[in-house]
Length: 235
Image 1: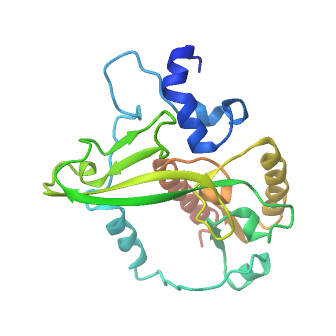
Image 2: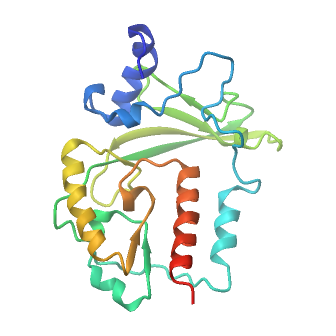
């Protein structure tokens, strides 16, 4: 993707600095290429024909999955990072951080995490679901105003969240794999470990694959992985 200097300064430089705390030269091109360039009046981020969120939200979608008669939910179960934990199961689909699974034996991978500040009030805050703040005059990267995700509903009040990006530390939720050259070298070692246990464990999701995946990609990957497993293990 090639953009002029003026567009770069307006839309890329400050936002990337806040989001990744790295110079643009250090950020993998695959991350920067996610920003669409348009020459028409289509203001959608994605180019796919069908896009949106579940009518009742993701909570209802996940609840329907977890309440299936073949699903047992076990909470507060400690995973000590050893592959031997997987032996008691017929097969494991692991969506946590791949370096945690192997106890960080080859080193830790780099991630960014997010902090959120909740803002409530009456009326409308910004008229849109998401607005990105692309310069350094504001410390946050974007603001979400949730009622605009479901414009078919009507709400007198508003709930919004400002989003702040920072380096992930111990115990932080992991949002974005950094995938810097050092990280890729370490991840390749974990991939070899993963291949060695592939008969018992499948790694999936952003953290298991150490890839920047959008929600639709994650859902499609999960479905494709499940179908492939069931086909290969049909009895």
